[in-house]
Amino acid sequence: MLSCVFCKIIQGEIPAQKIYEDSFSLAFLDINPASKGHTLLIPKDHYELLSQMPENEYLAFMKTLQKVVKGLMKYTDGVNILQNNGKDAGQLVPHVHFHIIPRRPGDEIKIETWRTHHDPDLDKVQKVIQSLLKD
Image 1 (cartoon, rainbow, N blue to C red):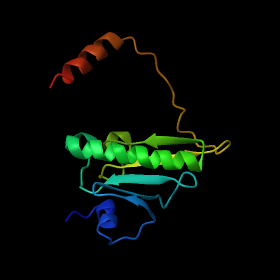
Image 2 (image 1 turned 45 degrees about the vertical axis):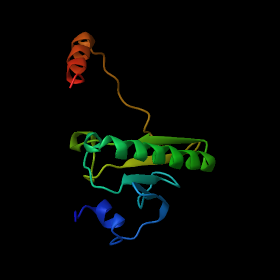
Image 3 (image 1 turned 30 degrees about the vertical axis):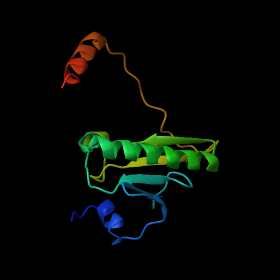
Image 4 (image 1 turned 30 degrees about the horizontal axis):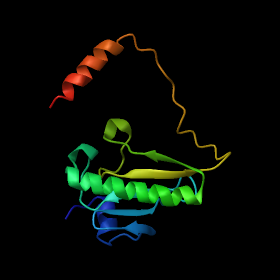
């Protein structure tokens, strides 16, 4: 058995405020929420990166993500859905997880603002990424 914090939640070793569970995934409230109702959705099997999930589990997981989002959209009029994939992207827990963050007017959460940069090499970047997707 793996010992990451999310695996311990799945195994019942750490309590969580569960809001939804099915055979592939678990959704629970974040203990350090960005807003009221901030939910984490995790796969029950341990994968550090989204790209490591088998397609059938990924598809089932995405259906659950949609279900949880639909429910939270009844709770508020907007949500941010975030997934940090890898250390360089800010992933702190090495287990795939999505943050579903309910938004409200004036909440002062700044997710949607980042500094943009002009990239004169877009054609080169496009070709490199396209070549990487051919695998």
